[in-house]
Length: 267
Image (cartoon, rainbow, N blue to C red; front, side, top):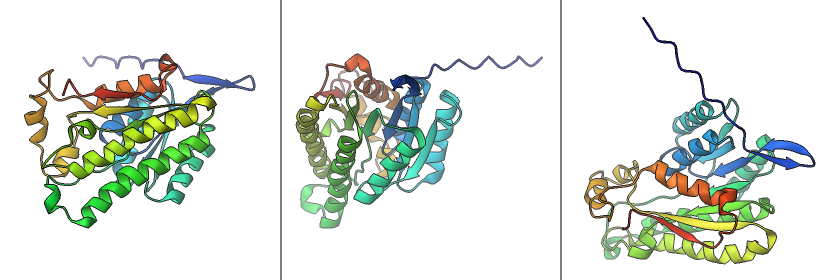
């Protein structure tokens, strides 16, 4: 005999009050089609938020994230839009589309980024370095600039950096490490700019996280190899980073700004 499906868990919408009207809170996430971005999107949906995600190339994967958000939250709570973070007009259009769909933004997760295959700096060509810095630095700054324009008092921005910023990633990805160092500096400076407006700015620095980014540059074994070297003896999960991002956006972190939180298993 087939057992009946368990009842769907009731979702409590995360709301704010504007002019006496209760509205569901909205989070915007760049790079939300996979990995940490996807895990973060689904977590916010589960917590009752509207979710706007961007993708750069894989529409199918982005649509899958939206479907996961709807299953975790409620129908119509998520949408995806193609956005090239290196293009200021594309970034502005994404923010405008999210505002048009859901109303004012309450939080932004500045997550889009790339990494290139393992290499020493001496062997890196200029095209590779430009690609990494254009996306991870210029792109991060353009997204943060739009967040500074669109968020209001009570809003929060979380930048996704990397523990590579303090380790340097020698003989692997010093270009990537340097780009994330710029994100750390952006976080510190922008927190001081926006603090008087009631907007908080923080960052997370993930360590070895078990996502497909390692396989995408030809090193799927890196997760196991370096995870074992962490103090906790394992790689992290994207969900664990998402939990830290959610806390920094949430009101539970209302007196936290300009902070960079390592989510690295002690690496």
